[in-house]
Structures are given as structure tokens and as C-alpha cells.
Image 1 (cartoon, helix red, strand yellow):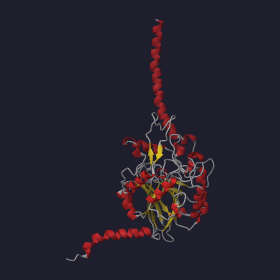
Image 2 (cartoon, helix red, strand yellow; image 1 turned 90 degrees about the horizontal axis):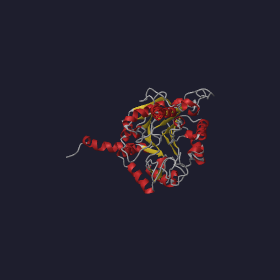
Image 3 (tube, rainbow, N blue to C red; image 1 turned 90 degrees about the vertical axis):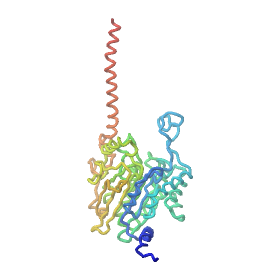
Image 4 (spheres, rainbow, N blue to C red; image 1 turned 135 degrees about the vertical axis):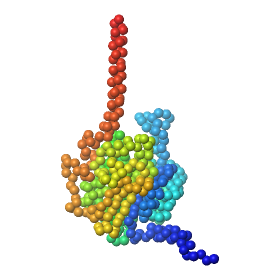
Length: 453
């Protein structure tokens, strides 16, 4: 008995859709209107976020680092044979994995069903951060970087003859879309050539700076996305120290200023940043770096997040801390789920471009594990075009939101979080001391009277 074409449709349609998606991924001239990105995915943890990422239906997905956690962590220990913290520390808290173990972790990550589904439907590209580079907070001093570079590129299915396999570092670029609807993606390597954190030295290194200058002065595009594993605009450390510090371009102020000058001098329109690393999501904006606003959409992490690192009862406290932390660059919007406009649970970033709108529009969003928006901004692409009419000049001795740096905040404002923390600790300590003095005073009086009698 012959089978009707309609009966075969359910069997053939998935295959046709799969082949179509593969052809779209391979066609660099296809119009790209949906890009997803993320960071900080522990291969040993559950990863339900991939269903939401696939549901967004991106044409391109960008890894921003910590794509796996390839290093190892010793217990937090002040005393004992292996002391990892404190004045008597004798071993580092973090240490790298051997090559076979790191390869196994990449294989675990690649085998996640949700991620496998994404790889079938979207082109996956990416860079690295410290934990997949090989060691927490590591820079150019890390001796295993040649091996870890090869393993990362294997994970990303980089061609064997790719120039990324020959160069020192994993920086690269891509151009998507036809003329008039082009999207350029530039992925930086903030690890391979980076000097120590306290040095205010190099982040990219001379070869990468020369390459970046060529990329920014090269063929034009309507949108240029610069992917950095660490935050470019926000300087969280300036307002959370001395409680804790995070890595960012702001820890290297001369390098960050050089980056802004390069973007400005290139006269390239449509530049925006995406970043990861910090285990929470936020959107920040700097109006004094170029002749149009520079946005930085931080998405972190796909599994790792500040709120999930504490018991649920303390999660509201984490949101309060985020609200109290001073910031000059964060974008506050009624679209945010929380008043602080940060999101401390697993998330991914989403970029949507409406090329058919007049004028064309771009939407920058953070989305949760269900795919719902937790914060975002939307504006015409034309707002990211160099124009002296939009240029903002920093005014000395005056506060300008999205222009004044966090380090320029008044001392009491800048250190508000630390003052509240130490004040909260000091109050009960002082109360206990005063209570002790109060209790001891009658005892001393009674003792003196006893001796007199």
C-alpha cells in the first residue's frame, strides 16, 4: 500500500528544518537578527537554561568565558596541613587540572542535551575567561595556556587550519549579514597577555592591540559587538572594596582609556560591549568614552550566580546589597525585575535587531532560565553613530551619571557598603563590651565592699 505524501510530512519536516538551519549557519550573508550570549557554566551542574536559550532561537551564540570550570579549588582553611587563606597560607586555593581532566570536562559540557540542541540550530563562537583558561584570576604568567588554548578551540569546533590555532591567544572576529545589515563580532582575549591585577599594565598585549586597531578601522558594519570576558564599563571593585574585588577593565585604567580612545578615533558606529565573569547580570552605559553612548551588557552566569551561592533565606539580603552598592554606570529601567537592576540568578544575554523598523531598532536584554526578560533597553541603532551633537564632555568637580567614574564618587558614598558592613558588625560588638563593663562594675563594687568589711 502506497504511503501518502501527507503521512510522510511529520518524518520529513524535522530533517528539512535541520538542513535549513545548518545552511543558514553556514551562510555569512544571511541577515542576523537574534544573538544570544552567556558565561560561567559549570559542567558538573544542571543546565536548564539551555531550553530558554534555544527558545529564543538565536542564529549566533557567543561564549564569554568560564565555558567550563577547568581548575580545582581546595577547601577554605585557615588552620591545618594545607592552609589556603590567612596569614599562614602555605598552598594556593586554586590549582589547574591536567590536560586529560580538562578535556573530560569539556566533553561533559558538550554532551549536555540542551547545549547539543543549541549547536544544531545556531553558530556557536566564543572566547575564554580564567577558569577555562586554566586557573582562577590567571594572566600571562600561566604556564599551561598553550595546551588550554588548543582544548578551548577543540570545544568550539575551530577548524584545524584556523589562524586561532597558530597565534598566541584566542582573539578573533566575524562578520555576519549582507551590506546595510552587517553585524561584526570582535572577541577579545583578556587572559593570554594580561599583566598582574595590581599592575595597571597590559590587558591585551601589543599584537592584539594592533589586530584590534585593524579590525575597528576595517570594513564598516551597522553594529559592532565587542565581546570581553570581563566587564568593560562597570567598576564594581571601586565601591565594594575592601570587602571584595572583581576583575574588570577598570582595574587597568590606562588600558581601558586606550580602548575608548581607539573606538572614538576609529569613527566606527554601532559599537557595544558584552561581558561575563561576575555571576550576576546588569546593563551599564558610559557616555564619555566616544561620540555616542557605549553599552556593556553583562550576562553571568548560565549556572553560576551570586544568589544561588547562598541559602534561599539570604537571597533577599543579596538583592538589598546590590541595591545599596553605589554605581554611576548602571542603566536603571522600569523593565528591571528588581529595583537594583541587577539579576543574581542564572541568566543569558539576548540581542534582537529589527532591521525592518524605521529606523532599525536594537534591543539588549537579560533573560532568566524561563526565557523571560529581567531587564533591558531598546533604542534606534542610529543612536550609536558618531555625532558631535551627542558628545558629552566631562565636567570637573561635578557629578554626571553615566560619565563620572565610580572612583570619583565622594568618599562616604563610594565606601557606603563597607561602612554599613563594618558598622553592622561594630554595633553588636560594642554592645557586648558595654554589657560586659556594666555587669563587671557591680561585681567590682561588691568585691571592694567585701574587702573593706
